[in-house]
Image 1 (cartoon, rainbow, N blue to C red):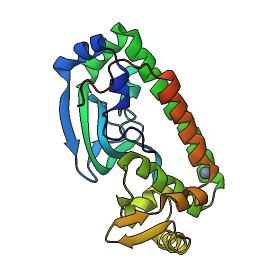
Image 2 (cartoon, rainbow, N blue to C red):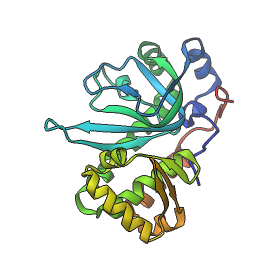
Image 3 (spheres, protein in one colour):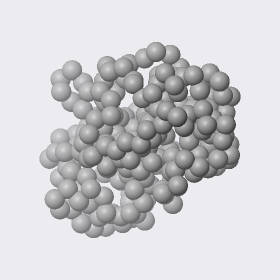
Image 4 (cartoon, protein in one colour):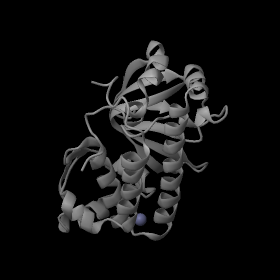
Length: 246
Ligand SMILES: [Zn+2]
C-alpha cells in the first residue's frame, strides 16, 4: 500500500506535457544522503525539490535545543512549494531521514511556470492544502496520543514511502520525530517489540510488522492516509504520469 513508490514524483506526474516542457530546461537531478539538510530554518528557498524516493523530515527547532518533527514527505510532495505563494524563508529544517533522490527546479523558474500554468497552480495548491491538514492532525496527535501509538504512526508513514519492512532509523532520529528523550525511545521500542510491531532493532535498523503496527497506531495514521489517498486519487489530474521520471 505504498504511495506510488518507484513511479516518480506524484506532483510532477500530474503536470501536463506542456507544463513539463516549461520546466524541462531547468530541472536538475540531485540526491541527499542520510541526515543531509535540504534547507535550514530561516534559509531562503532556492529550489523547489520534487523527491523521487526517500523520506524527508520537517524539523522544528525550539530555542532550548529541542527538535521535533512536524511532518514527513516522500515522492508525493515538493519541498519549497511554500515559496510559490510569496517570498518566504523556510519555517523548518528539512532533513533526509532515508537517502533521497529528487528533481529540483530553481524557485525563480518554478514561479514563472506557476504563474503561467493553471494545472501547476492547481496541483501545488492541492499539495499545500494537504500539508496544512496533515500539520493540524500531527499537532493534535502530539498533544493527546500515547508515544507507542505515535511511534507506530511514524513508522507506518516511513514504510509507506520506502516500501519495505526494514527501515534505517536511529534512536536519535526517532527521538526527534517524537519529541522525546532517547530513554523514552528505548522503552517504547521495547514495548513495540513485545507487541510484535517491531521484529528487529539493531545498529540503526528496524524491521517492522506492518499489520501489527496498524493495530497499535492511533487513528491519525488512517485519517491522514485516507485524506492523502483522496487527494492523489480523486483530485490530482492524470496527465503525464511518470513522463520525467522513468
Ligand atoms: Zn494520533
